[in-house]
Amino acid sequence: MTTFALVLWAILGLSLVSHLATVAAAAFVMRRGKADSAIDGTPGITVLRPVCGIENHIEDTLRSTFEFTYVGPVELLFCVQSADDPICPIVQSLIAEYPHVEAKLLVGNDVISGNPKLNNLVKGWNAAKYDYILMSDSNVLLPKDYLERLIGRWTAGTGLVTSPPVGIKPENFWARFECAWLNTYQDRWQLGSEAVGNGFAQGKMLFWRRDVVEENGGLAVLGKEMAEDIASTKLVRGAGLKVRLLNEPLPQPIGERRFSDVWKRQVRWAKVRRLGVPLYFFAEVLTGALIPTIAMLMLGGDMIGLIPAMLVLWYSAEWVLARIGGWPATAMDIGAWILRDLSLPVLWLSAWFGRGFEWRGNAMHAADVTEK
Image (spheres, rainbow, N blue to C red):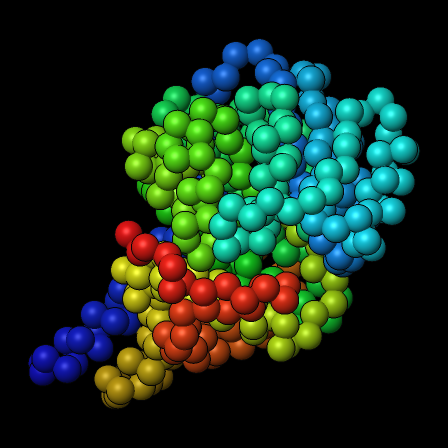
């Protein structure tokens, strides 16, 4: 067997085994039992939600912040940069609708980094009265027991509890394409990594104990990477602690999407991974079904006839995981998974061009970031 053939076999084996292993690991995480929390009782919690503009299902996601079952003291701080933002009346209406919940809308922008979301949140962090602080993006739909889940996942050695988003309620094909990236791809890899004690932070949901941040450089440290996800992971690991993920990722209603918006978002996140965790990103091109299919074609012979069986196995495993998680798993979703894998090498290549991107009208660059 030639060296080239050995390389092709290695690519095929690595891709298929890692795919099936991450499916199994993610399913294990979602089905595992509850561990013992290191937090006693029901401490006070401050919930920070940065808001900016009107997003899909925004009233539903913001309303879910108020409808918690946690019995300990809770304050909700909604952070917005401008009083003219169209989201302000919605937030103020919700605050008035739930007078029994301590909640405020904070307005202003304190520039501590090149990350506009972090600059929006800093006023809330400084105003927080409690030492446990949740940063939750405005488009995440919070279940009634979201605070109990976060407290319960704070086991010994934890520095941060997080959750990747699960795409739900897709209303057109491109929304399902977005879910294809979020659910059985990114969530699968994050949950799989969590299963072996290698959790990564996800900026959608960051549950901190104040001292973990403030004793390791303060909130501004989270702005020293292209995204707070990477910076949070490095901060926690640098402190000798662990990032823990919730067993069941929290949902994000997707609504309708345009291909251009989905693609720009995926390129942006891919660039963040390339700049923040380059070794992991380098291997991403092997994580879809296209590269192992090409390897089988190049091996030729009987391997070509086995391609349909390999693809059935590949996408059946994804379908089982989606069913376990209660995620979208229709025939149209499977089509979106196939399109995702066909486009993954193109995305991977696109991420190598440039060191910046635009996020909500803000140009963000890595030129001033010290890569670790």
